[in-house]
Image (cartoon, rainbow, N blue to C red; front, side, top):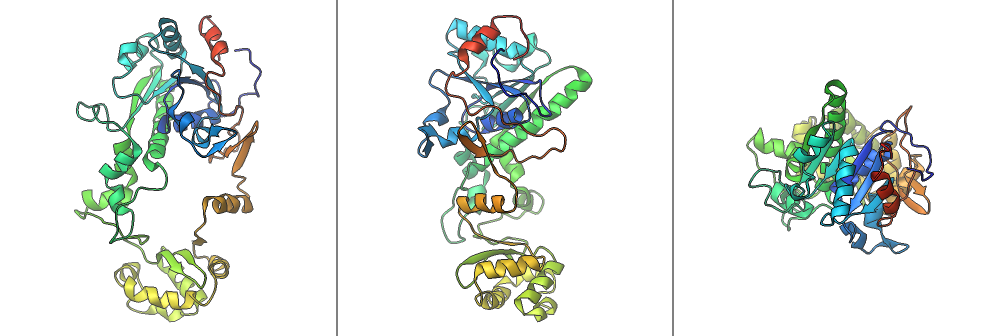
Length: 387
């Protein structure tokens, strides 16, 4: 393609990704691949990705939801019911190293864009599918939205006050997790292709990602026969590991082992608690949390949360204030993580992975609908392989 763009760098430079996904899980995965150097072509229906209309909030009239997961991509709008557009989509799939989609399982078969059809003309393709509940006969029929999976998986039963209602997480946590799992699957399949020369079909579904991501909570049931329930901000296996009140608000304090607990008691001025037979081991502190909590709170209420934050951190015990999102970004800036990168006029959150030799790149702001359509159509009608 002829358009002048910054030099493509990164560990995935040279890979072509056909992105037939929309909303969050798929676009998040393809953005991560794009950050690492892959050339990502975002295929959108004529009406555009759903998240373009998910607003407010907006920046310059554009949904910030859409902006969050679509940098470093080129957009082409294709109506798969139109023969010329369908031919362009099929040619893109034929040339791609990776095709990622999150249509309803089987939904692309009628367009000749399912795995079997694409692999017949492109046997090296890594074809990644993200669904809500898998491609089996029962799961394929179920619509997959993150909120539904948060409910069905059990996450909502774990979130909220013990005597209150179940709550969803503040983000679409399983969409993000499935996007990460899809990225891992794609990279693993690419590595296998180096050895075999063959591509393969990678499948990820939100429910499986959810059950894996519930980690200790799902293990409590499958390995221990225990059904965990809501505990508010408390941890089922650790104490202290929750917000505790200071003179002006709560501070998260986590003492994950006996050494940290001893240091915490010392900085709070109650070192005798570390040797108290009720509290000298984690399992005892967890069992006797209702006795231990008021003893800690009595000391914590003598100072502000930021005074205690400085003292407790200095003692080597993990803790932190409960910020709003602006405070989280500011804290990351304060400790030198440089969390925001601006592409054109669009600020976005930096890719979280740091490489010593092949860093992530930020070449293109999130595209407008069909911004690169004319150029991509010209490219797809000639024999030039590289985008």
